[in-house]
Length: 207
Image (cartoon, rainbow, N blue to C red; front, side):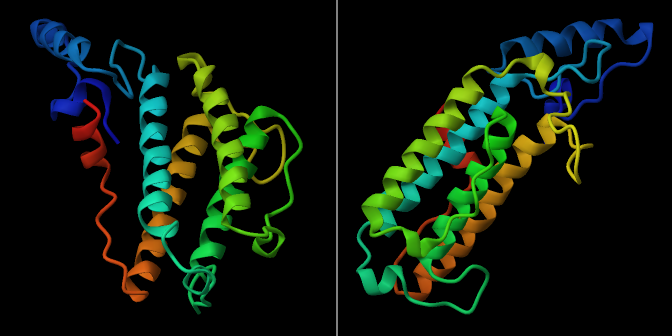
């Protein structure tokens, strides 16, 4: 990940002799739209804006995948079985939604839903409506995210009790990227011409 003033490839200064370099680097960092980690003698200082930006990428790619490639599929293509990962395009998408919903329900302190069953959705409009609700709840949580929260341990017990919030937030986006890539492969097998989902292209489009 991008490390504060290290985002420009220069490590933080470590002595008074580097004071001038510190000033220069902090000046550079101050002009950037966000810093994931800001070196100010506090290596644990993190920027919630960076995570809101990163989730902007997650939400945008989810919608791009749906609108450009999934919506035009026939029902047969949408539900065509695949002996890989979670199966069909439909099943992969429902899994992606379910995982987002599970993690953010836990972060919000509400009841964690049972894993979604693709068969419970009558059609694509039902899936899209559910996905919209999940995204809305995620955005609400992220809008209230503060820098000081990012090093909290949000789970009091269980196998995830030692996870730090920033780790959870990165995991969810990384999981989404993984499954979108799997879906893109399935779409290619169906003869659909797709494009990349590289994060840097989102950055170029959203300076």
